Image (cartoon, rainbow, N blue to C red; front, side):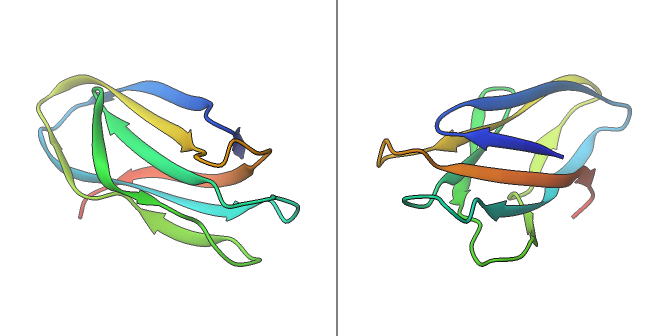
Length: 101
């Protein structure tokens, strides 16, 4: 489990043993006491995957990034909060995984 508050980030370098197409899959929920919603941006090797993801509702839901393609080797995957309102907003994350589309 992890959380992103405001425009902070979580990132990790992952070694892909097989070249191909992948998605980032995870469960997410907005903090109940958020003043506004917080969106998530997903980056692979510094390139943002569109669209931004906006978790919603009062229970965890599963979300997926758009498909991305990587060659064999190490690649950086980053999640960043997008907080245009500048207020105290947080997203909770769980069950992050890289999956084939």
